[in-house]
Length: 298
Image 1: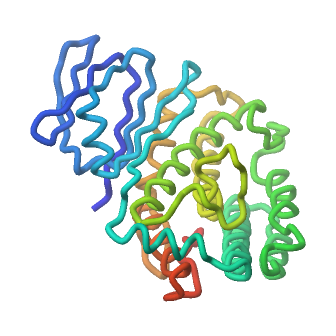
Image 2 (image 1 turned 135 degrees about the horizontal axis):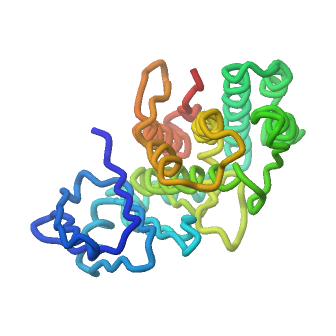
């Protein structure tokens, strides 16, 4: 079953009763409810949303990812369950003791798949993509030749229409805003799944930053990024240069967890695919598998 993504962009009071999320809308006075067990992602995007500690505890016990947004409506914080798996300490141990050659091999797989998905999206957008296939084929252990960066430089020049004169900069002009929003949702999904698979999201295979609590999420989300880019391409087709965030654009990006992807020869909602990816990573750490299962851009 795919878990629901709930988005709140208006003043609301959120509490819990009988394992339900109870929503009291402050503007209209109406009350709604939803089973907590159905919620995978809860996005709080208004400065006048209040929620109770009892609700927060139940959401986290259900492994719901709670995302808070700032006054510019950009996701800025995430909250997760710290105790996501029954065999957690055993899995932590395997992750902590992972050898450098294993981590380099896992990073090689990750970069190869990311570049292949970027190439597939360029092909879908009818852009020249063969150089990326060459880069993907030649990724070495640990991506020692930094093919990821070379591929990115080419990819970002080609993926969006020329009239946007696009440069990928976090705080740059649109559609950077749309990419950032989509990636924040993706990052939350991946971090949530890593916790559910008994892994530490902080301990990356490649990304290392003492100020980043989600280094492993940043690693594992890489091959999924082109799926966000695909939605942004669709938004650009419908809006041209007018890319300041609107409710309909936000709605399209909030569909990311439910979008269909191909993984291990099967079609699956992206949220479920992420769970398969993180479970396969845990097996790699434990020596039970050699390959991370990643999605392929169709």
